[in-house]
Length: 383
Ligand SMILES: *Cc1c(COP(=O)(O)O)cnc(C)c1O
Image (cartoon, rainbow, N blue to C red):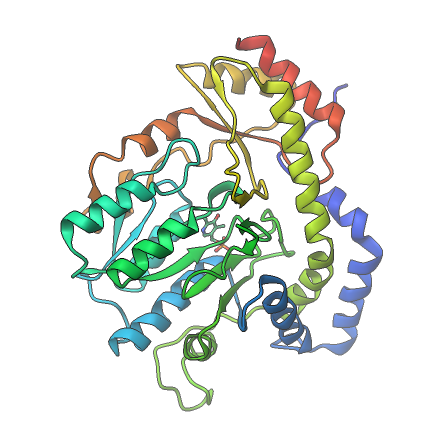
């Protein structure tokens, strides 16, 4: 019987680190410091150091990292608890729902700008064109998403932000350890939002997230918002949340952070093997890693032209190989964003990508012969 090849192998990763993880969990059980225990602070310090930034604040999820950063900026920049509906925040339609709904939750309106079909990230030319032709008056900020672990062009995005006086919050949920010109993603904008959802490059044993920033006021506001909105729990200033990062997650993440660079390097190596093996197939476009970007391959996503995607998916399924479409529906097509968002132009590239992309298994412990087998299956049905 053939062994199943899954998209990620969290069980295998756990076994690889087992003694260290078990030890960390055991210490938590003995200490019983479940809420904001010392591991949370330690993780915040380690991550701030790793990203090269002054402040890191643990929160309950990547979604909350986005929402709380946005709420902090509404308070800091506008003196309001929430943004107004007339405040527009630009982002990509080709991302996980959370990027867009965080904007809605913070009271603002998402404005979707199309993607570059080669990187799947927001198209910086279209971004600049939009800002240039509309004027910045109602645009508050930009949330670039480093999709699949590939950096956005942060030179261009920061240039636009400066030119039109916009804030930038990086959605770094898929790109922990990724870089642009040697600088860690998440450290470019006003804030960076990370997710520790188990499948992310740095994933916990449940939900978790982190906000990173160089701005002390933003860090302080996020710290207040995550604990009901006050410095004093029993006398609060803002409409906050219960959004703490669990001690036990922080303990697990402290162990996993030590393996992160090694694991990202292994992902890059697997991507290289795919690249060699799938190169030259007409119907398939391979992920393009920009020379300035250090791609950490949260996903290895290929594009299959024509109507061949279902054929490939079926072939992989027959051979017990998992694959997935991230994302089948661009945000502007979802019900939740109807009448609640704006679009710049047709968003054709995002729509095309949604019908053509396919993510293949990629994980630090995937074997070379498994990749060869996956590629052989694909080559059996497309030329
Ligand atoms: C996973 C993800 C999020 C949300 O993170 P959660 O921890 O699941 O809340 C946000 N944006 C992107 C791009 C993601 O991939």
